[in-house]
Amino acid sequence: MRKLLVALVVLVGLLVAADRVTVHYVDKALADRMQESGHLSNRPTVDVEGFPFLTQAFSGRYDRTVVHIKDETRSGLTISRLDVTVIDARIPLSKVRSTTDVPVRDLEAIAVLSYYELGRRSGIAGLTVRAQRGKVKVTGRVAGVSATLAATVRLDGDRVVVSTLRGLLDFSVRIPALPYGLRLKAASAQEDGVHLTASSGPTVLSARSST
Image (tube, rainbow, N blue to C red; front, top):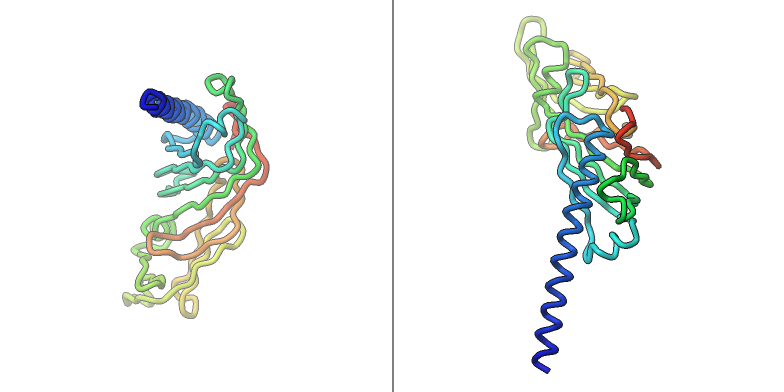
């Protein structure tokens, strides 16, 4: 009985080790495709969710994978953080090392635009934007006098629109095309910046694709 228990413990240990090794290879493959498909300047970090992982690996289907991209610059505008959830990625285990195309059912993303970057791209000299107690405050000069005004943030097409009292310090910032064909859906003001939600629908992460 003791020998059986020892054998079971060893077997479980080997399965866990194999599980973690496979996770590493798949994470790397997805990170490669995400970087190449998105033409990213920085390598993303990838976390394939779910345990045990081997059941997903054997099926070649990964239900939910979270990808984190930091400080991505597009047309002069820096997105401080881009979190992408990959839904239903398909990578056959036999092609993990060699695959160049990864079909996915959907990509759901949150892009974070810092208030510093928002103010820098406003086109208004000396203007600053910050979060304060759950609201957005804009500081700039009105008729030669420094003023701090409450503001609202919304999305209008591909532009983040910041509206202040009586339009005194209104401005908008165009958001360049995001990677993977992500389409902007909404904008909301959070403590760390403006959060832009986006999604892609069915797509293919490919080493040969363009933004």
